[in-house]
Image 1 (spheres, rainbow, N blue to C red):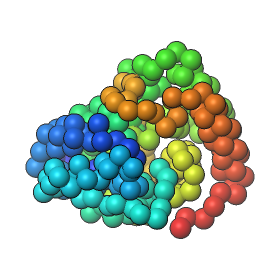
Image 2: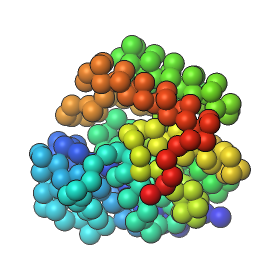
Image 3: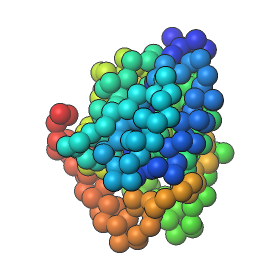
Length: 242
């Protein structure tokens, strides 16, 4: 069982986030206080030198993993969560589209559940991006729910809190982009993990260009890959964990 004294490891994937990372560090450390065991930032050697800003801040609870020869969201999160040592492991984007203060809403559910997921699609949740972008996300999540046959709503959330023993038993796939989350949730449901979706408000990044939202063509290309990955998940033909 977890409690208010359980330590928390937070993992942030980072690529060209120099304009967001100082505020992300400040808000996460302020929100979690003494419960924060570590804030692990996995930076893919950002050309904008995000890693240099992190080093300059030199917060005692911030741990930088600067990857020189690896790239990608899924693999960054796999590396970060594998390295985490807190009782609870949390991950989210560092672009501040997800309010860091909502971390505690998720961790509070881990007395009763094994996994808590920030959800845009349960009562009280919302997606405040453009109506077109929010609609496409809703369509994809509906497609995923129908194909995988699970009563779960936000398959592309990317915001979760999990007991460390669960993430050790069911690690994140390092393959692809955001598809890792869909595969991980499906694996958790197959193994009987207790999951709860917690409403939150998802918005646009605070600063900088989105890796997906800034170009509809890129988003549609990723959507096509997601759709194929969902079919592979359903047929049990996804890559093995590294």
